[in-house]
Image (tube, rainbow, N blue to C red; front, side):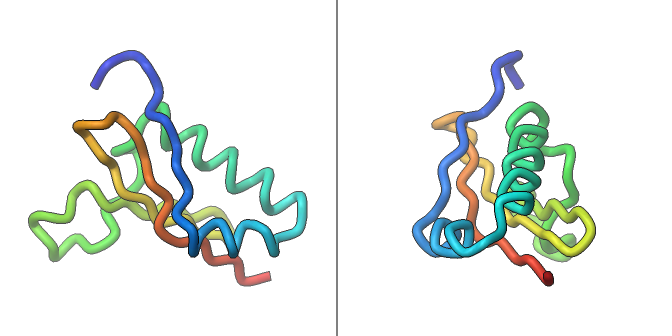
Length: 86
């Protein structure tokens, strides 16, 4: 991994969820994504039984979870899903 953080892209379904969240929750989502961009493999694998799925990660903080895919060739993360149980 290079010293540069990964760029972050938000999928259309995740963007729709992001638009409905309260401001403090959106701030937390971006805090999580900032950490993920700096160290994409720092969060656990989404499905540990999937040997080929090591680039799909799951970051959870309290009632908030973010699932993202690490696109190695393009050096970016794509947010697949956001769940907030609030």
